[in-house]
Length: 242
Ligand SMILES: [Zn+2]
Image (cartoon, rainbow, N blue to C red):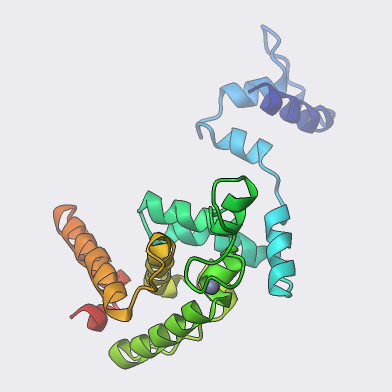
């Protein structure tokens, strides 16, 4: 509240020099306070005043660019941050994706650093450090799994998708690809969960996990009278679960 008032004061001290803001009201109320008190947009004015207008890359964004050896636009980062909120209502999946984007997922490498794991090595291949990048892309065993997923999507849904580190880690940018973003998230969740067994999830297991999510979403759509939205959302992938 105080920060917002300070920002508005700075902004309107300059504006108030113009004659249209000089009308005097009694009791005397500064213009910026008047604007704040009489805003009919609720907290929107607070957001507009306090949020920086330009998106800036975070330290984790820059770290990912170093790991991936590529420059990612600010607008792409902004989209990547929105994708988990756009494509699913599951807080668990959203939280997983936020941890990936911020490179703070509790993999063996990071857990070992804080003495919470005996080994920093990958739970699957047991030869390299289990970083987020290794776990979801660099590991040979996981890489083979992504190839199978590409084939599955092509054969059963006729969708050709090129899974590269950026799409796997952060998702596909276009809204129309949100059903695929859910599938990618479910696979990443399964890979992360299966670490404790050290067994790579096979294609059938992943298919069952995706089916379960699809049919639960369908039930929710029936009960909330939003079946049309459900049908439209999954239009490109219905054949996968038919
Ligand atoms: Zn590995």
